[in-house]
Image (cartoon, rainbow, N blue to C red; front, side, top):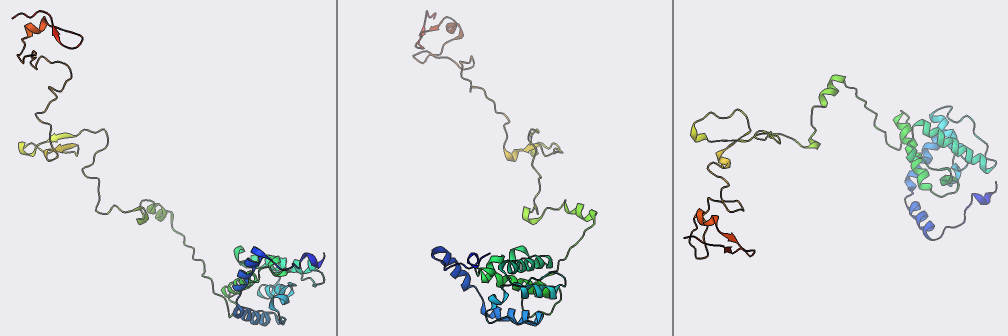
Length: 259
């Protein structure tokens, strides 16, 4: 495996812009803290270039073996490139088992091909935080909160199903009083009559209005005998006259009129 495959040339255009933005997020103060922690834990000195000193994966494997013995069974001598890549891969799998989240872990090429040193630094900080959470004396990173798992009795869980959370709204001070279901009767009730009030909510009080004394008489479209008919001069026609009167097709009365 040749070195040309792993040593890329300079980046241009969008690739160069992305690489520059990632490089700007690199923290030199964090690098000094990581250097002190790794060298103090492994007992080995990293070279002047921090990332080049980790690129073969040997120090990384020794670091995780110090934190959790037996994590990497075999550490390859960095003779060829595939030995180095295998060491880095073993380190990444070991810290995953140690508890580092997958989204915090860099890829092997981020370190070996110098494509994203910022992500490598973030992974080492996440490893330090996980080591601190497990009780190791680490001077950087944060201690993760411990999981507080709660178990409730089945009776309590069933009671919670009858409670409406405030995220769903509240029915405080509200009720369905005065509401009736669809299709039920709604009677009229006049308090002035002195009759007993209805026992249900299906009766409408006169405060809501009434149709008492109202009808639909006179609203029909056809000629009703209750409505007197009149001639062209405005004279009312008797039923006897109406019996002998016909109509033209234009609606005018025709036929003989008996006076």
